[in-house]
Length: 165
Length: 165
DNA sequence: CCAATAGATGAATTATAAATGCATCTTCAA
DNA sequence: TTGAAGATGCATTTATAATTCATCTATTGG
Image 1 (cartoon, rainbow over the protein chains, first blue to last red):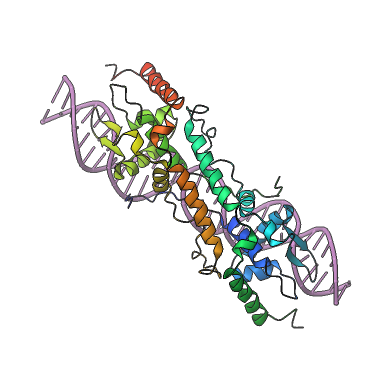
Image 2 (cartoon, rainbow over the protein chains, first blue to last red; image 1 turned 60 degrees about the vertical axis):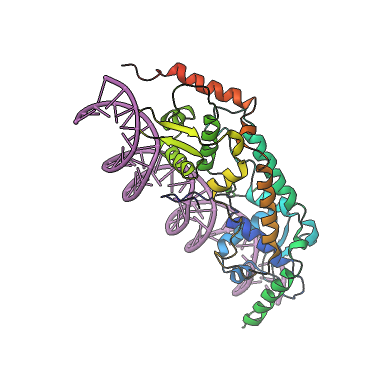
């Protein structure tokens, strides 16, 4: 409805970085398989940049969320049971959100006496309160779990099990 | 705590565009003055780009939120009483938010069967529900209203009333 | 009527940072 | 000891918010 000549900015979205982080957790929640999951595999399944994914995995490993092992036969795995990952905490960390507006960046004349900030903080808190009511286990319940399982099996069909030498 | 070599993305913030929009509304909520408020004045008070502010004002005027008059003696004014501006609606329009993740942009393999989207939508709804509990009148209550009044008076002291010819 | 003022509009440019790509290193197991 | 996997850092590309510039339109006062 808002008709403007120029395009309005649209920033309040999760970055692809966070998006990938969530997908990695979801993909790893499927445990019924022999071969370990590798970064290359996830990148292929979701058709995303392997390098970007590497950074996401690295950040999550540093958080203690992922167990990574190098070398041949290495790969990724969840470091905890799926119901231990609270979505709010995951997103908050990956997105590095602190405030919706920064009253100090270009110093606002109303800083310190502005009720707007309080309202925005309250709204953001409500946002994360909802997210924290859910865990990774919740989002990979059916039918999502089934879709993830299919994604895994698609892989083992299309790829050689370990190496076709 | 999240220690990474590179810097994590930090996107989920309001744009300066939206930020300015809110400040304009707050500034205009002060009605006890003779001269009309101009874009140039607001830009000066908040030390921001006059041109960028122009776009914000324009977008809000098209929404019917601002009454603008051109020409000498022109300026801006709120088009409605302050308690008619719901913060959620204002921010939603200025920020153009629809979804936190776009399952289709790089088409996600789980699209259509993913519980994550539902959770994020619910959280975003909670966010705006809080914001919609507040109006412009709420955020310009004391002490904010006082700070805004001072901003206005600072101006009339520092600037000649109409032109020092 | 004219000049000054104020918003309207569009194009072009700049700045910022997310996303991507590349090169190299480290680790581990067969 | 070789190949496979993640780790790390840097450079590049891309997207877009922010800014600037130029010009146009509308309104008022002299």
